[in-house]
Length: 322
Image (cartoon, rainbow, N blue to C red; front, side):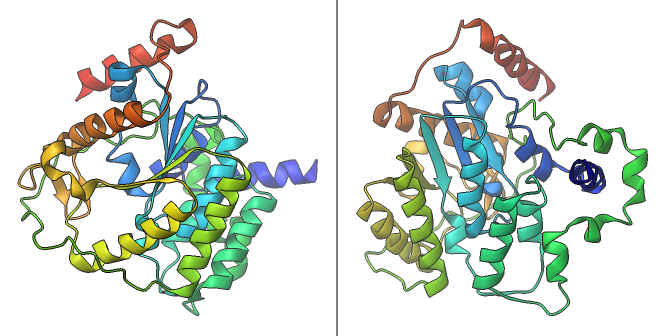
């Protein structure tokens, strides 16, 4: 009883932002065929409702800003508590950006403070702290007991949305997607393709192996992807190393930066910064990836099934609003 009260108080005081809603929103979704796990390179790139309208398979972006590599395994575990998807799509940019010395806590906060209190959340924080050198000003204990971080967030008590999350359940009507119209003129990357393999941090590779071992043990079908962005040769060579490791386990790997022409990406209009597409780029990337998935994986078409009637309505509402 006391544990339930403590959990409820914690969930009310936590932030009720998009990062949390993307995570908790998956819990009561209709059965999902595909789950896309990564950071912001999912929820501004992949449009689940567009893929639904085009292809008929159900998908969801289980993602938070600046997701840390250690979090991906635990997000997959969390997803498996509520769904049995045919395919996980996992973005690997968290491995490309991996750093041992961490100045702030936003990345681990966004990941861990959206999950339920419990052993998996504790293990996530443990692994993160064991692998990293964190700033001395970060209160490690509050990463485990996050009410210590949010106890003074009294505005939460006046916010109906916080109270709606008292059981850490919510709804993301766009299935974890964020519609962004703003754009930035960018120069198309040049001379970035390389055959070289860059060296990665020992901790980085260790986390990747741990994730792959888990996916293999659970007999999951997983496609690892790199979405298109303003890539450079140094990044590309890191992805070559990551691709070798992933391929050695028999999982698929797709670097979309090899397919700018096929995707139709235009760096002058399709991005809102060097690392993220806007809604115009998202539409092109979703077209490309949904076709790749249909060509390489066995996905169902649920259009017309009564249990998914709301998906048609959500798609129409998303298009009308934007």
